[in-house]
Length: 203
Ligand SMILES: Nc1nc2c(ncn2[C@@H]2O[C@H](COP(=O)(O)OP(=O)(O)OP(=O)(O)O)[C@@H](O)[C@H]2O)c(=O)[nH]1
Ligand SMILES: [Mg+2]
Image (cartoon, rainbow, N blue to C red):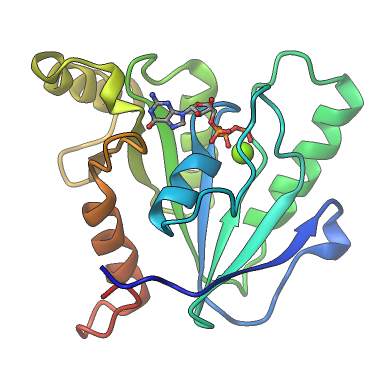
């Protein structure tokens, strides 16, 4: 497997820091603690490119990483962090909304849902919000190593039912621990980057 060049570009704490440079973006969205930063590190074969939280709610800014000079991976701060203050939440919402409502940016959303916990009401709300803006998120069921193999199909079906998504929407089972789903995820990313050719950033 080829190693990708990955470079931390910026942590956007405020709307004015959002990037808009015409590069395609892959946005990683999900509840706090769902495994966004861990997935990003695993995807890129790095131990600590994106910070992993020992306490949830660690990723507070929108973190941009440039991959192979070609595409931006965007690690978004997790939602639903119970201990966040009201003003923190309001600031978070403003930042996230400004990010997703940039009409000129080409963004593909990967929405992460915990395979064991399933889709919570906040996950449903996020999915509805994203689709209402015209995004078509790909679902990633994270930490699938925590669900026994026999129970996985039922866990995935339940996520589909809760989010009311059809069979046409892909749900990728993923584990940063075992590496399951890494290949599928790269395939998905490359389909978004250049659907018409085999030109991809993952060798
Ligand atoms: N067993 C298992 N644990 C995982 C996996 N992915 C992440 N974790 C653990 O889940 C916790 C949260 O992971 P993070 O990657 O920091 O989660 P996050 O979504 O970035 O969280 P915020 O930055 O707070 O939004 C960490 O303790 C990880 O080690 C996985 O695939 N399997
Ligand atoms: Mg994080």
